[in-house]
Amino acid sequence: MSSPARPLGHVLIQSPAPALTLQVFTDYTCPFCARMWKRLVSEVIPWMNATFPKQISLVAYTMPQPWHPQGTILAEAVLAVEAVSPTALVPFISRIYETRSDKWTDEKTVDKTRNQLYDECAALAADVGVDAAAVRDQLTIKPDLKSGNLVRGLFKQYVKFARKNGMHVSPTVVVNGLEEGSISSGWTLEQWKEYVNGKLATRDEKK
Image (cartoon, rainbow, N blue to C red; front, side, top):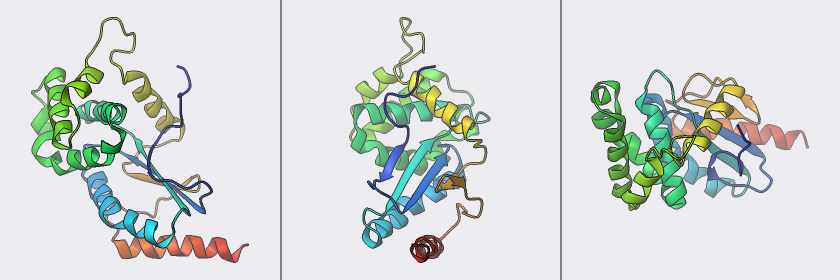
C-alpha cells in the first residue's frame, strides 16, 4: 500500500501552530459518535473558534467498525463526497447522523445490496447540495481498478491509520498524540470548556 498523497484527516479546525491538538476517530453508524459529532459541530467548534482562534487543531478520522458492514459503505461515501465537494463534508456527515436511526442501522440495511446502499448514499449527498451522479461515480466498482472504486485506496489508508494507532472504541479522542479515555460522547459544552481551558492553562503555566 502506498503512502497517502496528503495528510489523512478531515480538518474541522485548522491551526498553523496549535497549542492543543485533538483527533477524533469516528464511525458513521455509531450512536455515540453521532452524539459527539452533533455537540462538536453545533456547540464546541464554534466556541473553540471564538475563544481560541488559531490555537486549536481538530481533525476527524474515518474509522468504520467492521461489525457494522454498512459502515464501510458510509465511510466510502464520506470520502467520495470530500473528493467531489470538500466544503460539503461536514454537512454530509451531519446528514448521515441525522438519518442514522431511519436508514443506517443494522436492521435497516441488512437486506439491502451494496449497490442499493451506494445509491442511497449518493441520494443523501444530494440532500446537502452535492452532485449525486458524481458521488455515485466515485463509489461505482470499476473492473479496471484493482482497488474496486475510486475511493477504495484512500479508504484502506484510513483503516490502516486507525489500526496502527490502536483505535478500537468509537468515538475515540486523541489529545496531543495520546488517547484520552476520559472524554465522553455525552459531554456537554460546559465539560468541553472545562477540559480545554484546563489543558491550555496548564500549557501556559509551563512556559
